[in-house]
Image (cartoon, rainbow, N blue to C red; front, side, top):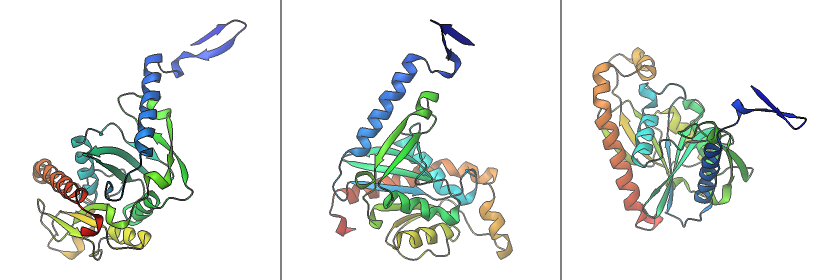
Length: 259
């Protein structure tokens, strides 16, 4: 309903957030900007990318994104995702002791996940706009934008980028942390290696099991977890989060060259 005053300019109140909500959104955008721009020495900022297909969160192939969601909840930033159109990804920032974690969920398909990861690490042009995702502050947060300074936020090496992804050759419930190496047939990892021009990224491999018949692999990977498998997921996601955080904490305490 329009409210006309003083010869009047029409103001659509329904499109305006309440004053308190608007102030809260402004405060959050400023706080996030300060967090983004804070300089960090080498080995004190890490990017963790959950590989998967956007829009398919319940599938085996996107279990890396499920781990990232659990990591965000553990770090208290589950409602702080920010959409970065330059990277084609959702970002969330979190503190871990004196280190900073940049969590990244690609908005590109698995075979092109590497483009989002590489843009986050070596973005060009150096300035971008990040639209805050929906959260408890609602539309005021959605409309808020934060300028990101690439040289300070994304100045990372491949060794400082963690990839979390599904692994066919391990049964569901098994985890393995691999420090660099080949893609082992995983298209998302292959994309990251190609786009970053490096295979040095640590990877957390989350087992999803391999079907007995080779022709069933694609259906298995792109399919959702069965009800029995879903019962195993919560403790698996917790253990994966523990493994990631413990490894990052340990690396943050020593020179990067000692990885």
